[in-house]
Length: 454
Image 1 (tube, one colour):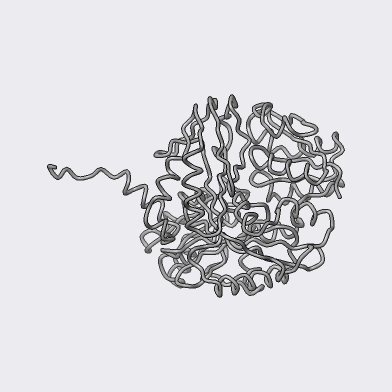
Image 2 (cartoon, helix red, strand yellow; image 1 turned 180 degrees about the vertical axis):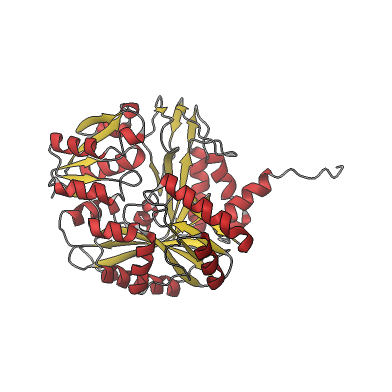
């Protein structure tokens, strides 16, 4: 087992990794920007190294600085968390070349699944269901020809895309030139390549993903699905497991398809396969070769610590169980709490004047916030994750309602009021929602009402 792990991240995920390491008897090294000198994971880690100024490009994305910190402190492994360099194959390759273990899949697997075009090809070969799609599109005319072949509506995507960037929808020939041009422009600005491709656009899907674990010896298990359909601008807001849209037979069938596909690909470590689900059918979107933000809901229903499993697998251990040993228990829901205006979603950095996290049976809060903490304006605005677990979905919703009422964050605006609104809506309570539901709800809530003279 590793003796010392460097955590190449910040925020709640850095603290999450630190806690797993401490429970395994592994010492930790926190790297941080100048803006994060007082962060909780920095204060709790065995060692801390400042790797640059506040800007991510000068610190958390500074590959040489992170590797230098690992060498100087004698770390024998690096955990990248999620975001930043977690799916950067070049960084993983640099780490391995310096004799340090990268806690994640192999460089080759990251490159295969990080390119959406090659990932789609690999998915087809592994037996995963996909939508109709195109190869790389060279020109607007290519896009027009493929759109007419596939049939409108279509969506154009960046091959290196993520986070909802580089994605544009076209409903007819009149839209195709603008969609193609804008998708390429966004891809060029945000990713290493401006190459785009096309898929059939599903108009009312749910976003359902499957969590997998695989070791170096060919053992693979899936840990059930997460429903991530409550989202805005392709960013997840609430996640739950199991999905209220699936029955047990569908869950078993897609789980087995995924498990066999991962074994055929030869993937190793934790990963997530993301699907669109519409009219009873699954369509593969992409694979995330890292820990997911929403991993706690899976931990809640399985009792398996995904971060510890990542570390064990990277150290060469075999999975200690098979698929038949995985037991699913109850229902879990996660709310992402952001320091944002709950109506406009404008970030709201500032000083936390008062902080009280909810507690009680089945309530978990992943956050490194504390009273007096100054939220820096340079990074993602998520400051906490609230996770509840109960025997049934209804019981989990009641627990979530209570926990949100208890949550106190003073000094900055947060999205807690939005979460309270969402979970009180009949469609959400009934599990009748798709990936567009939240944006439609926000539009209807913010639309001016007609003056009816009442």
